[in-house]
Length: 271
Image 1: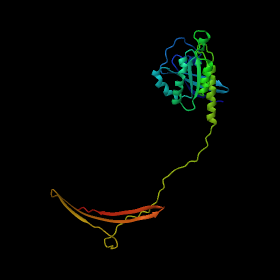
Image 2 (image 1 turned 180 degrees about the vertical axis):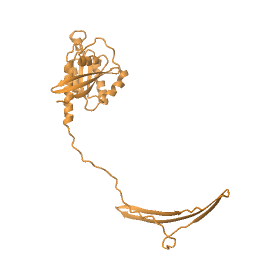
Image 3 (image 1 turned 120 degrees about the horizontal axis):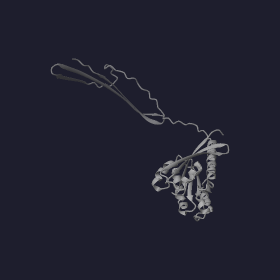
Image 4 (image 1 turned 90 degrees about the horizontal axis):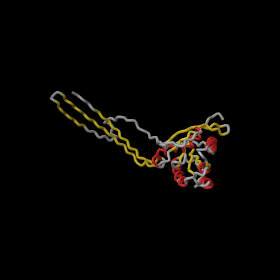
């Protein structure tokens, strides 16, 4: 396939489990014995080949401290996948995975890919630290919570780091293909429009006072006002009003009331 796919991945877990070391080992193939604590989010990127498909992973390494948790949450919704990391030599980091999962699912997309990684197994192999979480426990946890996979790694020695991200990328790729192949059945468009009842409107017209078959109300008001003996205004107001009221006309099973008012105003100004 010629198209290069781009996936955004976020790494989460307790502070000190080796999230930054995993990101550096995968993206730069390097390891630092001493490094500063992650503040907020750090970025890394690398291309990985899954069959004939090139996949570019942009990895967001997040801080594990509660202080920066609000920053971490803002990245969840844009992530295609989440790598959840714990330390195989520190049981409390494994037990906290329950809380991390709850936070992931509250803030991420419904179908986000979640992959579980147990890090720092090199300490166990060297006898520097005793194992506090067995492989079977990690695998059972992943199956219980329907995670996409589980693997044990060592960022220091590089054991299973590339394998972890390769398997993770395969799941992301398969999910992408499922989305692309899924074509929703087009639904017919239904437009709801309000029913408009056309009412016949009578044209406005004037009636002469000689017509005896209509009722007219005629009033004349004469106002005389002087302003400094220089301006005289004579206003003759003729207000003619006719009211036609027909009620209780049944049309389309609804009672309609027709009310029409027609008026004519005439003003004459003279100086």
